[in-house]
Image 1 (cartoon, one colour):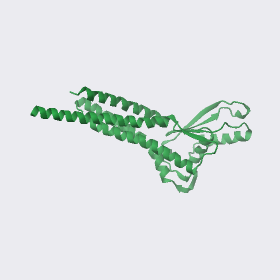
Image 2: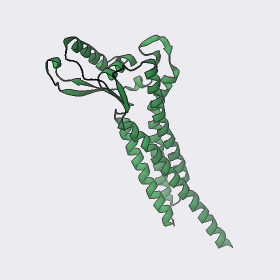
Image 3: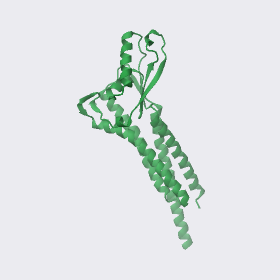
Image 4: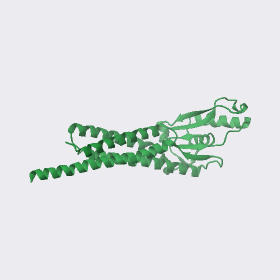
Length: 253
């Protein structure tokens, strides 16, 4: 028989865990981690040819850090863990219109591209591999998947605990949620550190600003939710074990 306090803690922990999974899944699947704000494009033919070149490089099959970073800076781009997007005019003769219609075009990072090396000078393979940026990029891709996997594993253990009518496995569920929360937090830290290093080797134009997007904040929120769920699970498991031990000792006495 489970005390009402422990049952309430388990329910609240489960709700927090579910919210954290939803937030982290949405964050991973969207591209608003980093946003660039550039001035409006000028209406002249030379700028039109430059814009067309940037867009073709951005949408091309060959993925190079330099070829997608410059369009992101110049075309109000947004960057995520799996997606990169730019804002471009629909019409090829946009420079003839006072207010051209703009649309967002996105390209996804393929799985092999997630593991490609980063170089000390983006786009120049002769400068050697930048190991720090390379592994930061790979970690920001792998860690959220590890976090979701840990929560899924803890859910399976929780179901087994319910079937066995025991709170003992709940301590394992709490530890897994704690590790998942650390992975979510590490994902955000790796992304921020990687972007800071990128902007050091490839500085932004003076007229371009950048800001953090709502996708990153969702991932950041998911971390304390997972840790709060872990605290509730661990408290329920430890408190119930102490109560059970005392009750057993009392009965024996």
